[in-house]
Image (cartoon, rainbow, N blue to C red; front, side, top):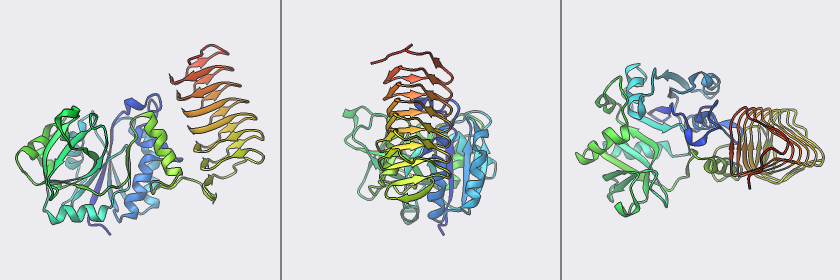
Length: 374
């Protein structure tokens, strides 16, 4: 068992992923039919971490089902809800003041990242260096949207830059939203106000030559903040590129099916995940890398590929869904095309519409042939 406690920061609004996150907090978006945060809890449990704090804010009431998932996996889950948005540092301090943490090292995970770090090796690295902070680092080609760390050979962080221009650094190592802290460091965060750990405390620690380290081990990491990355995360789980497991019964090959799923006579190319009570009619075709939630109906002649379809969606005859996200309760009319797009919850796309590269908001109803975007 890992001698470490964990906190998952899950209070953000996920604005870059809207309209998916209008009703649904980003840590609850489905990755292969499991909420992202449940995948994180499964990984923590497998790593021997049994004490976890879930720091919430936006739409906190939607997380009620997570407690049962944690209990099922032997995790003692404490939920702390910030009264107002407090930033990353402020959320940590608020949880600390609520008695969430003890003296053990604190593993911090952002609630929107897909990753499977070795908790044991990261905490050992942290302990061996008597570090205040140890970052689990990832590497990206374009660092302009991330916090970048310049690291010495021994792992010590020599410089931190927030979203630098390309000419400002040669480093491609970034803050992946996973780090280990000395919990007493949280006392240096002011209470009861908005405070960014990355912007307001980390630069001070690095400039003061305090014990801040980074560890890069080449492990899988993906930020799900943008639609293309959300789709990519689902695809990578289906393809086995990351050790997260789809929900449902593994029925052979790369196919997972829920209870009472009916797809006899349909063409289903793997990998695919079909939720409970799905109906895929004869003549429908799933061309691979398709995730369907519960109670989804796919009518005769419809074609799906590289898409995530949430619960309670109807896809009518001869509709085409490619490289797209269709949120809960939506209806895609006969012959409609949804490509490179997002259809919000409960939206209706009328017959013959073509949506290409657009975001259709929740509850919008498009009548027959009303909109063609090419």
